[in-house]
Amino acid sequence: MSTTGGVTTARLLIRASDDVPVDTPRIPAREAAERELSKPMYHENDPSLLQRALDRFWDWVGGLFDSASGATPGGPLGLLVVVLVVVLLIAALWWRLGTPRRTHASADSLFGDSPRSASEHRTAAEAHAAAGRWNQAVQERMRAIVRSLEERTLLDPRPGRTADEAAAEAGRSLPAQSDGLRAAARKFDDVTYGGRTADRQAYLRLRDLDLELERTKPQLSGAAQGAAE
Image 1 (cartoon, rainbow, N blue to C red):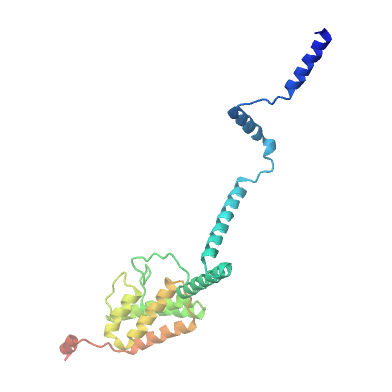
Image 2 (cartoon, rainbow, N blue to C red):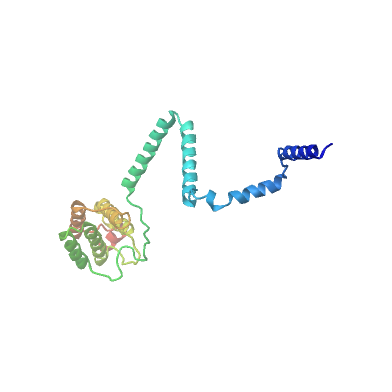
């Protein structure tokens, strides 16, 4: 073999070896790919953490909607009807029960800390009514009714008595007004604890009841009637 031929053969062998694929082990190759992909240049257009969380949430909602529509007769249209019915029921309950309020009843839930006479409560009620503050007018008139019954000894003064309790106790000696007393107590509770709004007619009913109670004589029990005779 000549020198020129040997050199040519060596060059051909080297060129052929360039076409042989390099066999890299799997784990080092994966680590190299991870290092390469972790560079910031590959993540400049990635969505933010908040965007990814929102996407996952809406995917979850969409999955729920698809599952519900598949299980509801009529598909998506049937599910829409069911949702509308539920919303209407909630709105009806909200309107009927009023706005929920976290109300903590104090030890004296009917009267305030400073005791006042029935006349003073009536004066305050009329002042609120004249200003169109019907909620406060109803509250003060109910307090005037109960305080008047206490002043007439038809009710024993008792701290912590509620409007419902006062109406029930007074109704035993004033049976003709028992329904009016219960209605007045309900109205007081509605505007004080139930978030309802009173109006002029509601106040006038309590005022008429107050005046009627002033003219009504209590009905004595059998034992009291025997003692009086």
